[in-house]
Length: 161
Ligand code: RB5
Image (cartoon, rainbow, N blue to C red):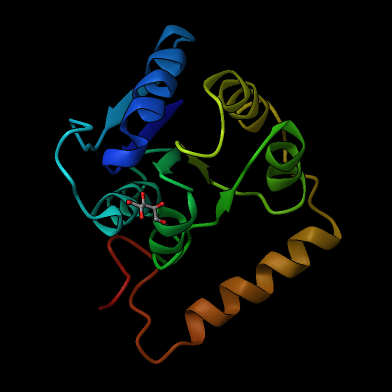
């Protein structure tokens, strides 16, 4: 699978560990930065970059990390077609896939340990969407995205400022 990964400085360490883990597992990792824990950067740049990569189809899924996973997930979710889920553990990772068909997993580098994060990511990438009533709910979200006056084409790069 092609996996876009992105973080700010607070998520750099965990992002690096997850990127290595996924590459070791045979995935193609597309690292969209940041490249250092020592330079303060703004998480929207990286959340939007990962979101765009997934929405445009240059990546199949995304991994986002900031201090809490909250800010970078908010940013990623501004991109139409992105379903970014803040995950804390294996349970939330599994449900994000089974019920929400999440295509981006968000984690907090300051709130989740590396071992737990790796287990959560492994679960995220090995769990299927259940469909059924959950698909109907996702369709509501897609319909809202399509109906927005500022909505652009389905892809690529269709979010608006
Ligand atoms: C950076 O200090 C921090 O605010 C950021 O990583 C993130 O936690 C925001 O949601």
